[in-house]
Length: 176
Image 1: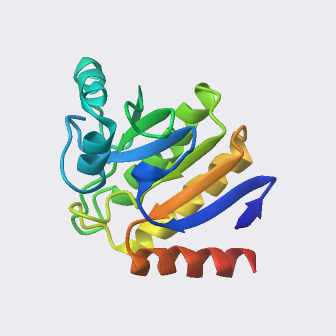
Image 2: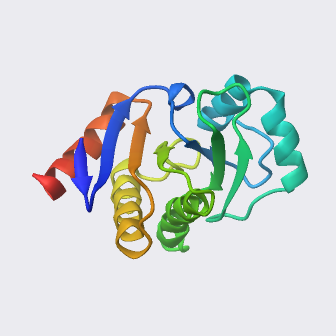
């Protein structure tokens, strides 16, 4: 565990759908209607009520975030955010990815949520380089804590050991 301005930062290797937090973040696509990877896992584990709410929302632009209840998941809410598809790094991908994390936390604060769990957004099917994505994720979270506050715990829940080790290495360098 790491601590930054009284906010606990934790990295977990595992399944985000099992996290008992106020909100888990879904790395969604623009339609919010489910997909592969984290998105598909959240929709399957959460049940049809999440999809029904997403249909009513009507989509989400890249870099923005929307919120639904969590259906059958142990969390209270799902924050759906859309990260960028990585092309070559020159199409504004870094800013869009940063916005996806930052805007997810803004929505959590708006709903007075204290604990949020993030997956590694855009690093699966959207092919964002994992180390660069982790650096952006950490920067967005720390910037949010500096500028906005109002959150107590942020988890980075990584499905693979290699991604877990990337986050661990970056956070160790920053905090140890």
